[in-house]
Image: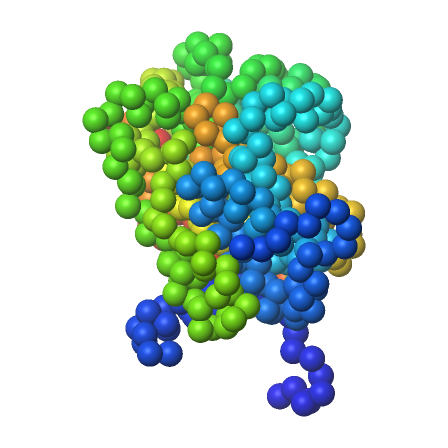
Length: 33
Length: 453
């Protein structure tokens, strides 16, 4: 429920690592991406 | 290939334009890329990558910038060890200060709930095991924090059957640390009117002679090891490799993140694509390719056997619950990235970025641990954290049986965490053992044991 002009809170390092790993697995399941 | 700028300004001005999230993801990529270069021995490429990271990382920045700063330092140190002369020269004037070391230990105790939880749970297990005993001897294998024993004195002083004669043997490599502890505890025991004696054993755990612990017949023994047993896993890997016929086989470590980023061209887009040209061969580090089964440590086995021989009524073991003892650099890097990311996130949610205490603990405690995990090999690599399941196997093999932590011990641990103003911390309970977690990631484990006959 953020106002459109308020910046998103910075991602935690844990979340960034998870995101990096997730991005990889999405790509490996879906090579056409 | 990127040009190498010998002098002023940034050769990669576009790096500074990145937003926090992009920068974080890019730092992860660069760290893994750099580790790959280091592992495969392409130091020139590693150097270029380090240069790029240095544009982005900062010990005073956001969490990922901070972690990246320490991991790059560790990777650089590893590279530097290819030139022992330069390495030694650069470390020649390093001063290690005992008061600083003590301070950093205190900060870890104060800023995180991990040790407090471990102490509360351990003391409860000790008090329960010592019920009715009149002569109690406690051996602390890492005697650096008096708070645990001060609390135990109070618990024992409040026993319905009255306090026992208490003897604590503290093992630590710095005399000053033990003396301070002796002073604090003796004073507390006098105040509570408990007969008390403190034995100091100035030694590193690896050099300890179990005979010196002077366990007497007739006294009930408790052993406590807080974040210390893993140091005994330090092995002369080189020697083992020479003996092992499987020496050159890769340990088959699956590194999710590393694989992830190899496939990552589309997501980071063009930004990342040119980095991939450098090539990510599944190279193995020349200095580390032992199969896991050869990681068993004779020294650990004989030490645990010796402890078993002392017949402790209870032994409480706390350890970092993460595997930083992988045989390849890349395994260790990706596992420790997750672990330290969680610890740095804990600090981010409790302290401002400019807090000098926070920077101290990050640099002098975590930064040094990361350096040891990443840059050291063989006997020098002491921070060989391993997961609880490994400890269970090892202690079971040495003849120890599990003592489930009591309901009351768990309750105290939960209460303690609730009193923290930060709700990211959790307690996980598994078969009578306890894990302290940050969100859903287990970081530290506490388990209790006794001699199985």
